Image (cartoon, rainbow, N blue to C red; front, side, top):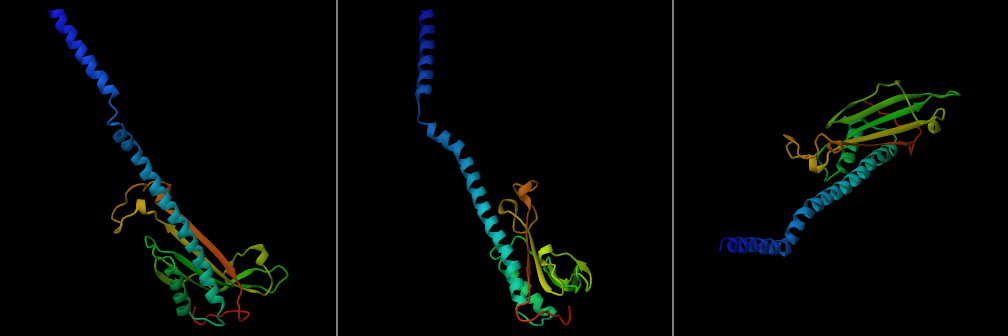
Length: 207
């Protein structure tokens, strides 16, 4: 009787184990639990990449827009330059996790066989604060192709420290996600050089 009972008990355990192994009712749930994190990561990375690309395009548009508006003027004032930079900043909307820095520099090439570039006036907005940048007659650099004697240039530099949404919160009290990684801040920037449209130079009376 003892041996028969032991045999029956083993058979029962074996039968239950076989039924458990052949039962496929929970496979879908387990597969779903494995796949969902991967799908969520792919979704957020795709969303973040598309937003970053679009924001980078807007940073480039800031430079081209500001340079275009300024080079249409015959004369300009510091308040006008600041207003134009503010218009350029607004093109980033609805992105608002960080603010762009914009530097506008008027450059005069000297009337020499090998001309050098000198600052005529310069304005900037950094962290929302408007102020003068480089001083008059300070030396600066321009691409070799633009070093033409006795010419005038407007240079606009636009820069942004892009903060991914997966590593940002509204009050900046803390950051979540990839804060210490490459994705915590992505530096974007563009530089544009344009010549005056309606005059040979664009003086600024109070820059």
